[in-house]
Amino acid sequence: GAGVSQSPSNKVTEKGKDVELRCDPISGHTALYWYRQRLGQGLEFLIYFQGNSAPDKSGLPSDRFSAERTGESVSTLTIQRTQQEDSAVYLCASSLNGRHGNEQFFGPGTRLTVL
Amino acid sequence: GDSVTQMEGPVTLSEEAFLTINCTYTATGYPSLFWYVQYPGEGLQLLLKATKADDKGSNKGFEATYRKETTSFHLEKGSVQVSDSAVYFCALGGANSKLTFGKGITLSVRP
Image 1 (cartoon, rainbow over the protein chains, first blue to last red):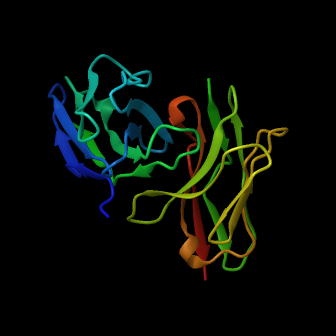
Image 2: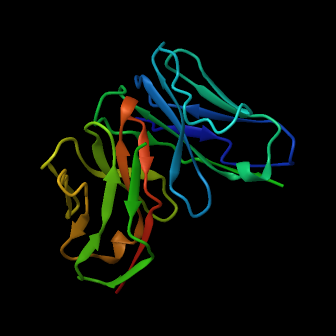
């Protein structure tokens, strides 16, 4: 079946503009995660959705970052007033549920460049 | 908070050499431990995992044992191949199973 998909694959924007990144998880997966990977760094957790529960937003670096998910489907990550330090690869992952030890399946990522 | 430390890279080996990539962690509670791999031009994928102390994860000839006493999850392979060239990430699964990653290490295997 289809894996996790993300769009766009690449996004170049000017400092101060807003951007929206999209993630389509694997069908039936109730848990969805956003991470980002800055150059030369490991992945950093941003936000976690599990079903209809309140999301875990503890990894969002500032109030310019927000994310939504409709039910158990598509999620969008929005970055307002982008800054150069927001340049990174943004990865989405989904898993069957948020239980201990479950494998997360990753999408190909969106490479964001802020000029 | 949770953290993962991986040995510094990159690592270059000859084919059939023995591989060890060190990984240690700091965590509260009883995390799950993972190794993810990213092959050139591909997305991140799970290589192996262990969910409790003394468990051994294995896949494609790679192994790692969850050592609670040394807070380690070192990755090993007895004989690497050129096709193992990739970036390897150690990760810890904590609360809500969100992952904390190490910085990753690039492995290059030459024929």
